[in-house]
Image (cartoon, rainbow, N blue to C red; front, top):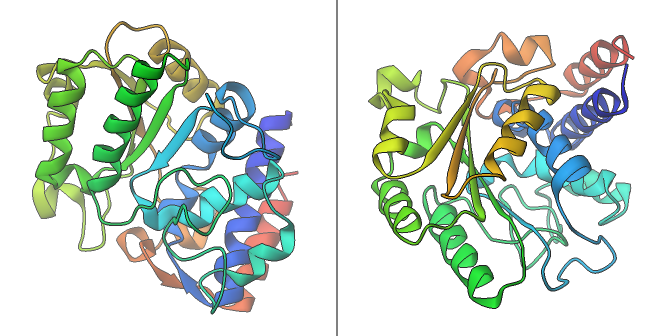
Length: 271
């Protein structure tokens, strides 16, 4: 097992720890983006956990802000705050609310949760970064259901118009949202062609839960002359079998202490 895989297991355990301690949370969409977060923070992003607001840092804006537990797990792993914070998810006076909040959590670059709005903010941040010539990359994570928001496509159109090649968007395409499968609620295909029609470069990752494939996609995206959309075909609840098997019900689900310990055992068996 390589180091990235080991970190992915730890991040998944920390997601389950947070949600299992609180008792309920957005587990499916948190587990599906683990490889993306680990590859970004370990291989690509420029940041300093001792100076979370340093000038010229790369930004990660998780527009699907309900995946906060995954972001908190990687931030903790990278030293932004102590592990005891993970036991306070969504509790009174916590610094780790259910949805990402830049005013509470070190390392969070934008408050998100109202779907579509995080992407709009990211486009503005990317434009500001270019005007400042700080060399930063602005990374954005969108949910597949989030692409049903019209605001997404307004932002995409403007970003292409401005040739914001410092902007890289990741689509967590796990084909499930709170009310059902994407195609049942409001289909988004042909997805790659839509992004290209809006003037974006596109790379499609067949296994969005493969660190190697994710790294290859990011490397490609950083060498384009236009903004790039990376479509990641992922599995909702990846890595914890009873969450994966819950399908669309894993958007937000009850995690008992017994469930949490079962998840720990399953993940530990892979080490």
